Amino acid sequence: MVLITGEWGPDFCDSLGQNSGLDQGRQLSRQRVPHPDGGLWHWTHLNLGMDLCLYGRHYIICDCDAFTKNFLLSEGTELEKPLPIPVDPYNVLRKSRAESPSRWSDLRPHSAPLAPSGLRGLVLKFDAMVEESEGGRPAASPAVVLYRPEDKTVELRRPSHLDHTEIKKFSPVILRAVRVPKYDTRKAGFVDIGEEEQMEVWLTPRDLAPPTSVTIFGRRVMVTGCDDQTRRFLLEYYGVENAPGMKQIETTKADERGSSGRTQSDIVPRPLVRRGILDPRDATVLRFSAQLDTPDNKDRDRNFILIYHVADATVEIKELARPGGLGGRVLSRSNVPKPQPKGDERGAGRYASEDVYTLNDLYIGSILDVWGRRYGITGADRYVLSYVRQHAEEISPKVLSSLATFFGEESQIAAEENQLHVDG
Image (cartoon, rainbow, N blue to C red; front, side, top):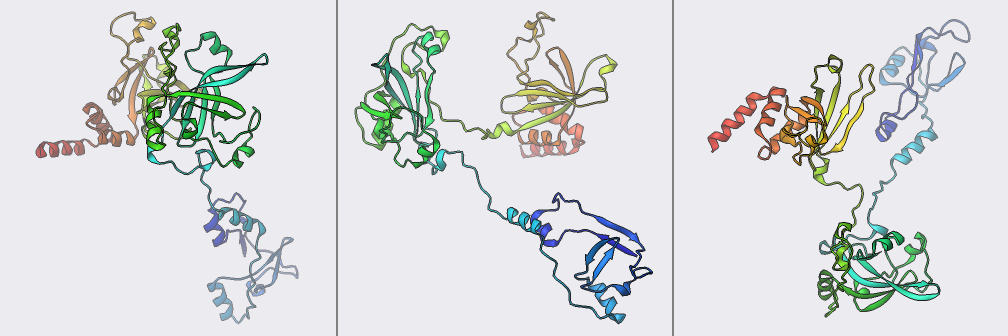
């Protein structure tokens, strides 16, 4: 009988893993195969280097294992020399791709070296006037220059004391945060990435020390002052003394529009937030299972997943798919206010409280009133129990007790409490 199966080679498995995406497996089940010269194939017909034709498909026998080799030699069969297995170009290509060096993405612009710790997150703010032309006549409009020494980027913004109609007419952002070449003799216009990468000398805080005038992408910018933090920075790093401060401008702009009405410094400089970098606390997510607390029997088989985000005490609810129901998101991530015990039972005023649900309210068996729907917590992930144990001083003991009961670890919790009592 003959049995033929397809397998991966050891080198191919080690370098590329067990899932290559190719169809592998048995090609011929165990059976008797007729010989072309008559009769059936027998083990005496097999030898190394021969061409084996089975049902029109040709196989070349290259080598055999030790047991087969010893068996054939003991029966008097003279084995030919083993043949090397031909190299598969496809496997070679996959192996070369798997061995290619890994590349790490760099979120800092132009792969700049890591800035010193004293410059990380620092934003310098300058008072400036941007030269413009209206109807062929030169003019100037106020602006605020934000400089980040960490990545040497410059940002131009409109000051917030401008009239509301002008805010609508002009964009608050004049220039996004980009590197600005120190020597720029071109006319005003856009700069493509290729030209920007060819620059080697960039604008520094020393070049913006007021009073001075610089050219930013063909547009003249007159720097007239800076805030207190920038003045201290210029004095410490560049020795610039007596730099003029930000000018005070009174305005009648209403407070509800977001301005104090006193100074251009209403623009609060903030470090650029890189997308994809999360707060470590924001990655902590606790999951609970829940069901509707309702007398209607039709909703008894509906199961929900309640997700609690520790970073901002927000809650989201998702329904599991069930026969006859698609499931999906029920509540987007948001703070859920607790219902007021008194007031309008049907109106929105019942959920106007500033007190929101926190982790202390999420214990096994608790009932949550979420915008008129009552959810009963029936279970939780084991990670929730581990997290509550690590932060037992900040969380209510009722939460830890309910989770320990749910996972059947009441004795361990009691032993820990006794140990704390003895140590105390």
